[in-house]
Amino acid sequence: MRQKLIAANWKMNGSALQVDALIEGLRSKLSNPRFQNSKIVICPSYIHIESVLVKLQGSGLQVGAQDVSSYANGAYTGQISAQMLADIGCKYVIIGHSERRQYCFEDNAVISKKLITSVYFGLTPIFCVGETKSEREQGVTEEVISKQIVSVVEACGVDVFAKATIAYEPIWAIGTGLTATPEQAQAVHAFIRHCLQAYDRELSSKITILYGGSVNAKNASSLFAQQDIDGGLVGGASLNAEEFVQICEAAVNR
Ligand code: PGA
View 1 (cartoon, protein in one colour):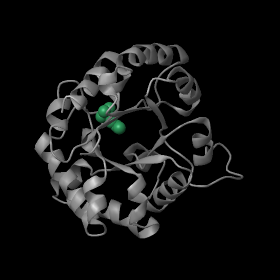
View 2 (spheres, rainbow, N blue to C red; view 1 turned 90 degrees about the vertical axis):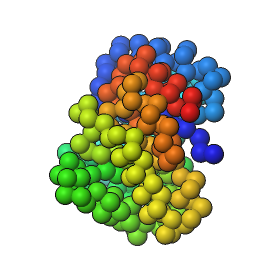
View 3 (cartoon, protein in one colour; view 1 turned 45 degrees about the horizontal axis):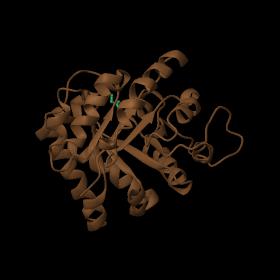
């Protein structure tokens, strides 16, 4: 059985004081042995990663970054490499989030490079895919998702997915309060496994696939109850310690 994974994507939020308070609220509750069979990952902004790592030491919770350079090292002012993240103790990295595709113009080629370099340095990518509202309305969701996946397979080889997690995040559901219904999400998750099955049957059944897009304490249980949904990538609701703990509870109770 696949292990549940819940990742908090704090995005560009939180002062040092707010981060301290949030971690304090999470650490004691989520260090409970009840959560030891699931993975819980906190992805703060770069600037807070180190302090979060220190505060979570010994808690069993993992830390991830929200992005990474596509280059291994060198003269790339302002960028942060996968090696640097691994070096300080990060275990995960979100790659290809729709906000980066949209605001930072990341295309499938750059995203593939980020996946390769991250896996090379031992990070587990959380690779995001998803369709826009108009793509869903036009009925091309599967086409869009399949392109996002196939472009990575072609650039990196399917083996990159043996070390990665996928997050299905319909763009129309991110930060909007509109959640995909459990049935809509399940259908796309099953489709993602179907896409990978063409390359590697075993991998397609083993890979962890998260749902993201307005996950909250109310809808988490019904989403996580779906056969092919292995947890969530949680944005807004992860900034509230109590609500994030409830979401993690929903995952372990499945
Ligand atoms: P949301 O964000 O939960 O606020 O919709 C999810 C994400 O963008 O990862």
